[in-house]
Length: 231
Ligand SMILES: C[S@@+](CC[C@H](N)C(=O)[O-])C[C@H]1O[C@@H](n2cnc3c(N)ncnc32)[C@H](O)[C@@H]1O
Image (tube, rainbow, N blue to C red):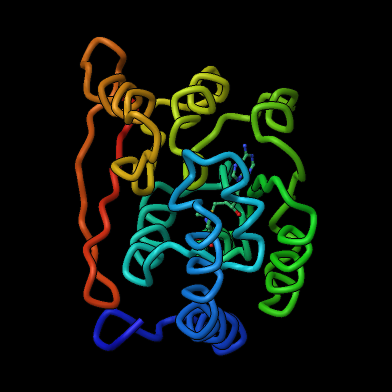
């Protein structure tokens, strides 16, 4: 959100939308978060947290967005599944990569229709909407049926306590060499057991993954991410 983390490196039509969304995040997200806090909803362990955050963008950090682009490019991704669209910031980075890989599809999932509509508009403005299908509703349902195309990259960036459930749902389609990217699993607002179980699953060699932890910074804070490869 501040230089040098925020490197402009995409075609102008895409970069303009990314820049606007990060500027809006800085200007507006704290207000929405404060209102949620005032209602007693400090984090997602509270029922209604995401409903209270429908006006908030909650994007990945700019540097992690850049890393998503690099990971999708380096793995030659064509089939991507995303848990948690919000306003579509991470989706923009991933779709930019798919465009540069020569095409493909992102299936992204969002609980709230209003947010999905905002993401769709942002992707249209960036000229990337043709690469993205947004499914509205609970991802555990909307991802249940699919055509079985092998998945190259999974991004988990929504309710942390559901990461393992969503991964297990998609796992039969994840190709060898495919990536599982978990954003901020450390933030599980509940007792932490579910997100911890997710990380334990990815770090247990017998489950067929190898994992690396990555930290990025934005607005003076540190954000943690985990990147696993299916071996
Ligand atoms: C952290 S935000 C995603 C940010 C987005 N990846 C980005 O970088 O712009 C998480 C989103 O997941 C959505 N969400 C929460 N639980 C969900 C569920 N069970 N199924 C689908 N979406 C969900 C929330 O409404 C919220 O918009």
